[in-house]
Image 1 (spheres, rainbow, N blue to C red):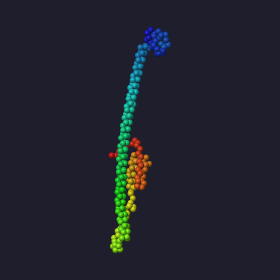
Image 2 (tube, helix red, strand yellow):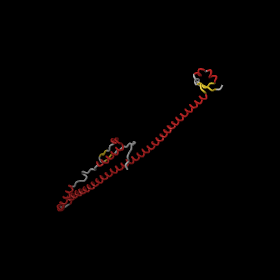
Image 3 (cartoon, rainbow, N blue to C red):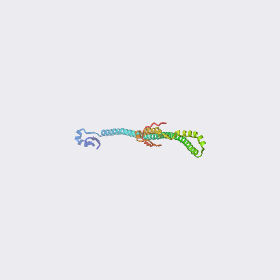
Image 4 (cartoon, helix red, strand yellow):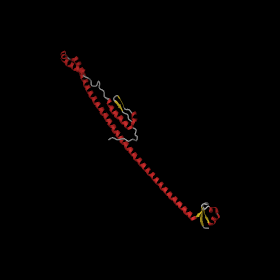
Length: 229
């Protein structure tokens, strides 16, 4: 038998004899030419294929976009890490330069204080030698000078001793001005605040006696720092 009929009710192809025997489906007009049905199904599959191809193109485009975004993200990550490293190195170099300038300023102030102290010591030593010489002169006159020598030399020795009594010792009220380092400490504190922000308030710089104790602690975070030349 030649299969030329398709029954949509049974969902299968039929020969002419079988189609005549099934009057219910025939009366319900569920029969159609099998060639037309096959062609319709081919067209339906072709349409579904085109839709699938279009869907595939959309997915491929989305996949490509995500892949490009991932590449760009890695590129941005690499560039950002390089920028961070560069900025941190510049900031460290800048802080080191600032620190060296502060230490130079401290050394200069200390040298000035030392020079002044040395001058005071030299002047005081000279006065002490004159005092010691005057003391020895009086002792020798008491032991060896004649009466006439005492009378003759008394005015000169007295005048010299009186002048020595009136001499003001340079070191009696001399004090190395440790407070001169306040300016340096202020600059250091400002540097810490610039690097660390408000956290620097907990880091103090103290001075005790003739010794200066400077303590700093720097934590590196990502920040945009204007590096001064």
